[in-house]
Amino acid sequence: MKSKGKRILVVDDDLSIQRILRKNLQVNNYDVLVAEDGKQALEVAMLNQPDLILLDLWLPGEIDGMIVCQRVREWNKKIPIIILSARNEEKQKVQALDLGADDYLTKPFSNEELLARVRACLRRAEDASDPDNQFQKPEILISEDGYLTMNISRRQVRAGEMDVKLTPTEFELLLHLMLHAGKVLTHRNLLRTVWGPEYGEEADYLRVYVRQLRKKVEARPSQPHYILTEPGVGYVFRQQVYTETDGQLKPFSQSDEGG
Image (tube, rainbow, N blue to C red):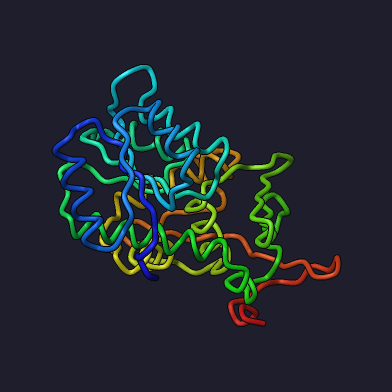
């Protein structure tokens, strides 16, 4: 993925951090916009439609980073949002992810780590919007008991009688688990497949996403029925998965992927 021409909005009231981020991103051929508070961030985002937003949670004024994230998601579901925050509490990370953030980095972080996350988020956004990437996947996946349904082409998920709103990352995580139903997927496999080759060792990071996904798709998240943990190894979608073609259901296997 080429970085040239990609526009990134940096939202941070710390001028020294603004300068560092702007310089490092521009050196890597990104166009950089800057906002110092939540109100300005929303105005710049609406006007310029950036390809990615780097968003600090602590912002002056009445509109903090959480509110910025929430409002951006109200009008745009696709712009990747990476949270940059000194807050290390899992509660804050979970709240940001639930509002639609795609990733988070805890300050301080290295320039290499930031650039890797930026590349990964931009690549995932491009892949999600490219119809060619959907071609070799089945259109619909259904759990054996009919409780969970994924419409891949429309990127819709249904749990029981409820439509479920997943972030792009949560959608890709559930999709990968269901495509490999019955197979234990390691932490490393899930991270590298869903997030990208820049990831692989962040088992705690993955756990946050799995917990959020369970809250949305499991009837009893504390006692999951579909997404089960293999301690020290990874996760598995335990039920058989079916595909639907012309109104007919048939068991899905990995050999079906790619037609």
